[in-house]
Amino acid sequence: MKKSILIWIIKLVAVVILLQTLFFKFTAAPESVYIFTTLGIEPYGRIGSGIVELIASILILIPRTTLLGAILGLGTMTGAILSHVTKLGIEVNNDGGTLFTLAIITFICCAILIFINKEKIPALLKFKI
Image (cartoon, rainbow, N blue to C red; front, side, top):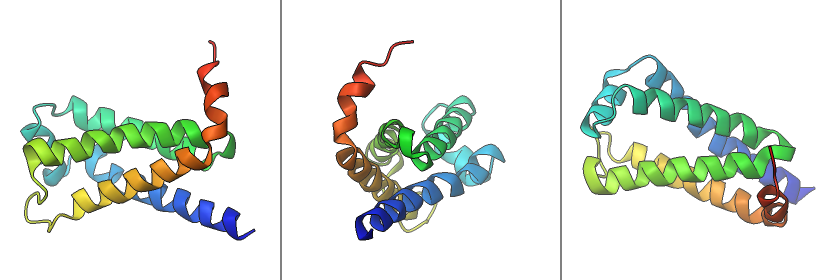
């Protein structure tokens, strides 16, 4: 029972972080536009990453698709972390490193969810359309 509650807390932390950034991405908030302009992928990168994060959030919440959502979230957060480290810097627009920290937390949560669901990976690899 305690393990199940902990897993749901990890899921919710990842999902809340992923979803709270969507408002800024989909409304073209100046901070979000600045980030994706700096990366040279505005507006398509901003909107595209928002869609991917929304899909990952939904998949993480559905027990049967948690692994897939966590893989999607991990990949997205890897891109965010690498963007911070290579182009944006840890601190963006005097945010005190908040966005970078949230990306790290989400990355860790998704990695934990992948580890917890690792026994499902062979079935995911056999997936055929």
